[in-house]
Image (tube, rainbow, N blue to C red):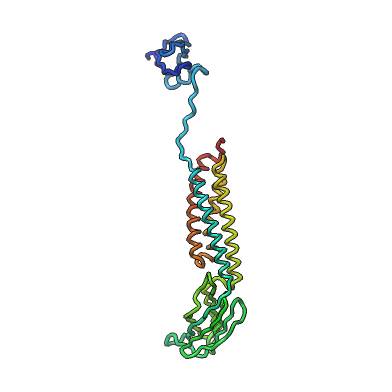
Amino acid sequence: MGSPTVTMRCPSCGQELRAVLAPAPPTQWFPCPSCHVPVPVAVPRDLPPLYSWEILPGLYPHHPPLRPPRWRATPVVSIALAFAAALAAISAGLLGYEGYAASEPAQYVVSGTVFEDSQGGLVPTVGAHVVLSVDGSFVGSTATGPGGTFGFAHVPAGGIELNVTAPGFGPTTVYTFASKSYSTQTRGLEITLEPAGPNGSSVNALTPFGDLETLLAYVGGAAVLLGTAAVVAGIASIAVRRPGGGVPGVIGAGAAVAVPAVLIFLSLGTAFQDVTIVAGVVGSAGAFALVLASADLASRGGASEPA
């Protein structure tokens, strides 16, 4: 085997130095070609690359450990959380406005047609008794006229309940809603009576809210939850930039993801579509931040970065 050739840097000037080592002595000196300072080198006892660790300690500068390049997701997560926090606050404000508008007094017209299901098909029912209540309070009653039609004027806002009865048919109940911010069908209602029997009664709910108080309670609760999510995401957008901010980033992103789920759980998704669209964007931004924050936290192994 030929004499080994080693490459090193001069500890004085940093100039690269290549030297051919002799079998002996164990430590040999070679002048630097730039500054001419003698540089000691230990004769390797093993084949390359093991001999590279046998250079005398303390004579050569230590290179920093190699680290794989990593894309820093922290700034992107912070921006996404700030964006989600702003939209969540807007959603809470929109819900608050919708609740205020729904509580304002107003009057509506409720009308429709009552049919009976006979062998020949649907036939208008004349003389059916229709009772209208709003939020559990009696408002008025009437009988269907020619063509099975009925109508009520000056009906206040709230949850509307129509109870329809006729001889030989089971009672039918229809629930609908009317307010300035949220309304379901109140005009042109078509109510079909079923033949009387052990379970002849039927219920047709056009709204998930039985009264105005329930709607306002759901809207208020959702507004508080959305406001809380906005605060959590906003704090997380700041905390994620600090050392060890991976966990707050995941928590803030999770709060943003929960925003559209709150509306769906409280049956407000179809009632207020403008708020639902904004909440959907909040959830998308939160999901994006959650993926980045989780991946960044996993890449760190849960450890905090030095300041």
